Image (cartoon, rainbow, N blue to C red; front, side):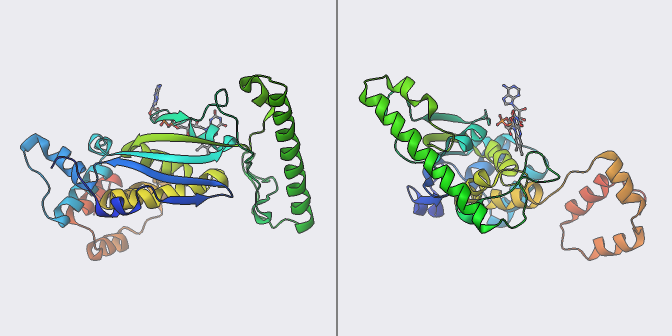
Length: 285
Ligand SMILES: Cc1cc2nc3c(=O)[nH]c(=O)nc-3n(C[C@H](O)[C@H](O)[C@H](O)COP(=O)(O)OP(=O)(O)OC[C@H]3O[C@@H](n4cnc5c(N)ncnc54)[C@H](O)[C@@H]3O)c2cc1C
């Protein structure tokens, strides 16, 4: 079970997935996969992988019960290129390791994020941190793109001018805008990558980072398909309720109908028991 190779991951190694207008995500390397998760989980009693069905059930069990350490045994390394304002959100995820292009060492390329017309959004009325889904006047969208483009060009010309005057690269770059593209190698384990994806694929995350999350999700699916499917089931499309929310739901629940639906549901017996425990209904039905 040393050095696990996953065919679907091998197939996409080094493949460039384009994101935004000039960005990309590439899977540079990976260590482990579903087999490593079950191997690590079963270490305590010396077992390895079993049938796919049993492995799937074990991974699902581990994930939904927050037995997180086996997922930390899977590591993914990405090469990513994104605008600086996306990178600033990205690097808040401290559980990753990264190495970024140095603007002190290298001359930064003339590459800036210029949104498409349909990605020009107005301010949301109900979310101070978000944008509205309302359609924008195409003339206004054109005006915004024209202005962004003009400023980007001007700032890059000034940057080149300073370099020509032999001003140090570390100083010449300081007025370059947040739309400038940067690149990094970014390495993270699967447990923390799921946390990243949950936050950054969410509707509250900014569109420009969400699109990276969506591409990385496809890559994770190739590396660890069973774990990714459990992540979708229990984290990505699952919900957590507060005590008062739960009380409200329970107060309005038709318990007889619920019991009959639960009996017919295609859930394993343990999942049914877990659901009843979660809802505090174990003795009530
Ligand atoms: C929609 C959205 C809006 C946001 N808005 C803002 C904002 O306005 N301003 C802002 O500053 N940030 C903002 N953030 C960033 C956010 O607060 C987190 O910093 C970011 O999402 C990283 O999450 P994390 O700390 O859980 O991840 P990680 O850093 O990967 O950490 C994962 C887990 O490990 C723990 N951990 C890691 N390192 C440490 C440590 N050194 N000490 C203690 N615990 C640690 C954390 O508690 C966390 O649960 C926003 C994020 C999102 C998704």
